[in-house]
Amino acid sequence: MLGRAWFVTIEGIEGAGKSTCMAVLRRFFEARGEPVVSTREPGGTELGERIRELLLSHSHEGMTLKSETLLMFAARAEHLAQVIEPALAAGRHVLCDRFTDATYAYQGGGRGLPADQIQRLEEWVQEGRRPDLTLFLDVPVDTGLARAAQRSAPDRFEREQAEFFERARRVYLDRARSEPGRIHVIDASQPLEAVAGLVEQVLQQVIGND
Ligand code: Z5A
Image (cartoon, rainbow, N blue to C red; front, side, top):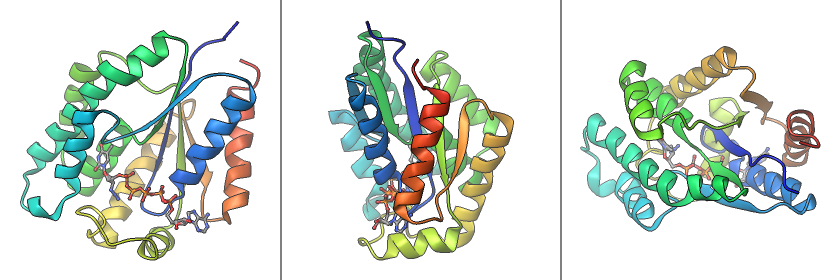
């Protein structure tokens, strides 16, 4: 008999290692023989992926902060209705690469949108749905940016200056301090294997045999 279905999110600035962490999460649940849905934001649905393209494309450099934020939440509304809620209702764990903490970090911290405006959208769109567990992969900005630079051409967010990511990181850390039961900070400056080990430790500690 399946226990509760967990909604787990992963957060981090550029180059924090979210992709590796997603794989560790998936293995953790699959080793228990439990079904998981791996997904991401912005994205996760056909419409959401189209919105993601608009958000990341350099064709829309002048997008207003209101439009950017509403597009994030439009993709999220679709994602919740089509993927997240149905999966949780069917007893499947949902593993999501970024969620609303990223909106507080990037649109809030990075771009300066007041948190209460994000909170109003969060309440309206999510109707109380929040992650059960969030892993924040914390890495110094210069380390993260150096890793990301080795990978691919920068998208519309990745072109931001280091100070933008410093502000986003500060918001993540503040949120982790105010919600220690949900948001766990992982030291992601270490080698990948060590980070994977830390992620496993948190999963054992929080989810264990639940
Ligand atoms: N965004 C937003 O503004 N508001 C929102 O509400 C949401 C999102 C939901 C796209 O997200 C953008 O959307 C994002 C925020 C914004 N922009 N930024 N920045 P995304 O999650 O798709 O984009 P991303 O942050 O660029 O994800 P990513 O590139 O997949 O990051 P990552 O998963 O953390 O990186 P990675 O691929 O795992 O690692 C990057 C490289 O570093 C790779 O070569 C790894 O091998 C290497 N790496 C990772 N960890 C290590 C360690 N520990 N040691 C050595 N090397 C490592």
